[in-house]
Length: 93
Image (cartoon, rainbow, N blue to C red; front, side, top):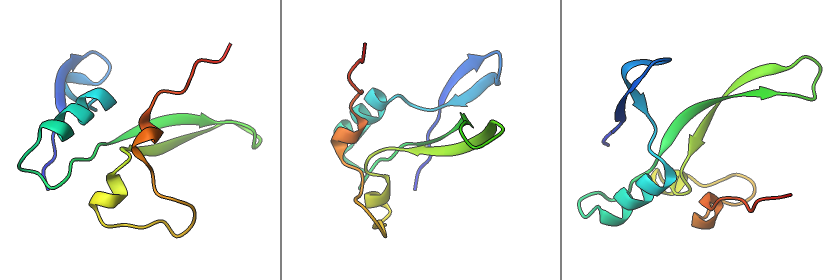
């Protein structure tokens, strides 16, 4: 297993803070890799959960579509993610 971060200067997170790769960058690395069995993306993201009384801050894990496949995990219910799950949602007006 290999872990990679994008390094950049970020005032809020500090100098050389680790940043997640974009979906496009992850797909590029996945397509160009010839020495890895699989390449996945994971990063944390915070949200405010509304609709259950007081707003609540929750921390989530965001993963690429193939995350569970690469680690050999199967969902107990429903389906696994598919590549088209990473496509941007259409704009709604």
